[in-house]
Amino acid sequence: MRWAGSIATWRGTRAVGTLTTMTATFIFLMVVLKIPIFGVFYIVWWAIQSPPAPGPVADEGGGAQRPPSPRPRRPHGSPALPRSPRR
Image: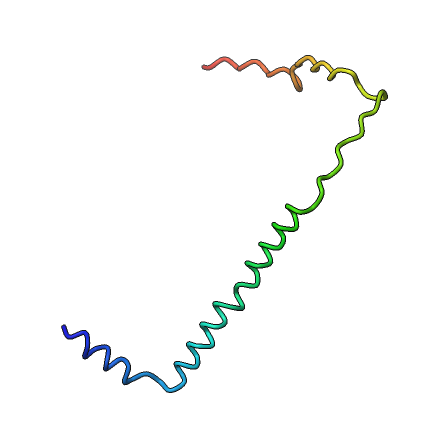
């Protein structure tokens, strides 16, 4: 295989507007699609820079002092019917 000949042939058959289209696509991919990335960086920076949320205020009463004890487990529904004898 002769690579130099195939490259020269490929370059010779290129359309006239292809370079302009490739340049516009390159600019679009390298510039316009970076805007969401910078937006994510800004949101992360903003979240890091924001002051911490205030903690809960400790009240001296009005709440349970200990968690409630678990309820006893009981069967649900009616008991199962006995099986009928096989014949």
